[in-house]
Image (cartoon, rainbow, N blue to C red; front, top):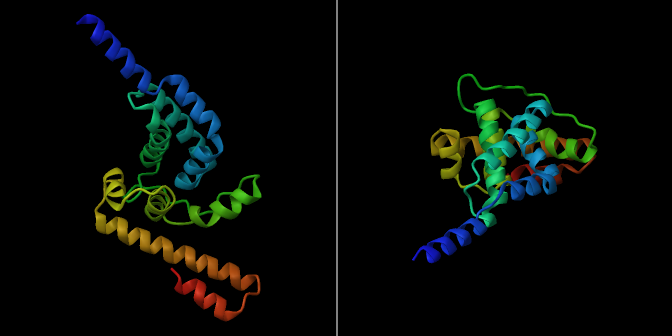
Length: 184
């Protein structure tokens, strides 16, 4: 009887992510996880803090199955960014400046997203980029489904407008602009 329970415990332990698993994930996926934190916080320093806190939380609370460790790591970063920014709450940070880093491609991709209002930014990143359902976003952000859906629509409209302006500044024909703006 004891041998069976011991083997079962050993099997279950082997299936759970370890501290080393999370360290490996945060090392291998450093760029992507940092970009996630940067898109959410719109601030390089806060992104670094959320990245480190996400690693610490993952290591400390690592009772998750190994195959879920990557998504758990992202969730830890999202939860830390929510704590720092408090999107949708009266005291949310609303730094609307685009984040600039030394990486031109990162600036091109992150700039428009980081200019969104905090709730819109979080909902866009969580639902569109990370694939969370509106219900998951609502639960994590502590707001209603209607607020999530409205924030997502507003974010999509603003990003489409930004894209239209970029196309116009690059000399694209007006018909192309109308199609681009109407696609949102």
